[in-house]
Length: 286
Image (tube, rainbow, N blue to C red; front, side, top):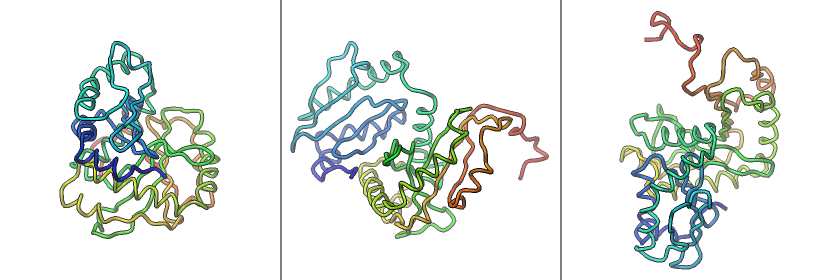
């Protein structure tokens, strides 16, 4: 199960590792994700730090050699000094990622979606991202999160789990997205309760680390939320980023024929512009 031990959490909240989540909170270009006994810090979708619990006061640091050029980095974090040494090098690690040119716009959009929904309280969005690159037996979802309806928000609510797949531009996979969704659906169905429990654990650990920048009253309510174990409430969300509306690659009719089509939602996003999406003010809803 993806979660951190109590000792790991205590060290991140009030011990010598506390600077790590704080760096992510203050630098929205970074993204911290909880794994099974370890964590990753991402920049532009690339892991720039993997931190694994190796003992009560020892955490192993793993960084891709492509990003360590010119840097002297600690191999373990064992105290405030080694943690400060790592944190001091994060700006250069970010620069090395940029210079190396690793990653894709699709991966960058994943992190932008996390930022927009988790770290921008003025957006008051209804979707909160829990994890990225969430693995199931036959593949992995780009993002996983929860839906919290803003019109009926209250404490101690049961909320829907959301499995989010991102497709950038005219990705060839779009043609077969209905098959991909069906495979994921069938793989997830027997594990629905287990997945919901795991995501609920991750969500509450990330809340404890301050990784959701929201109004204080909203945060207090979020701490009481429970993720539904009912698979019929799971949402499968296809995010089409900069999808050309003139293309026929996305076969909505095939998605509509899926037996769980009522659970599938499509969100169009991005910055590329076509006239179909640019409306005169006379056509806009005021």
